[in-house]
Image (cartoon, rainbow, N blue to C red; front, side):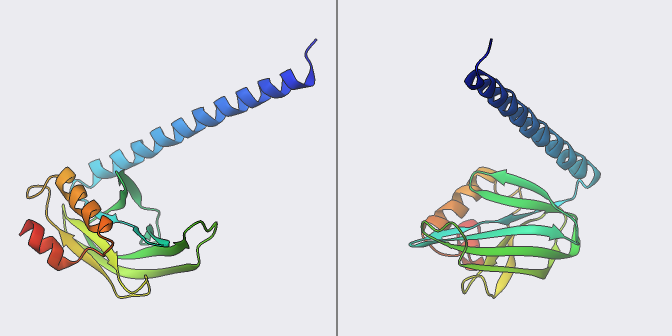
Length: 175
């Protein structure tokens, strides 16, 4: 005869296993849709977004929509981003500021902004003035000019310096 503790343990193990399997399936399905999108749009551009950690707070930026649809996301180290087809788009952006140790953001803005991306392009969404503006979409060097690892190293170095990435810094580093 099983006692209540054994039954609870079995239920927790089965539930935990189902959760792990579900998360794995979601990851595989997500990778499949991203791969299909990139096959269908080989000239897709990448838009990188990066939060900023400064003394006392963390700024988080997310691209939540492209033309009213959930974008295909990617992650590389501490940098995330979305893929978009070339051309003009309306991007949904969420910006949050979290104080150190806070369980909720102190400031949260959600807004739409126009973006224009180039075929095969790499772009970086940047903010100034605490996320309330101005914002811009900076053009990054192409994959033919700079490999992904060098680009990510540059973005991380800029973030560690505690500043926003600027067009001048991109030009100075990559020419």
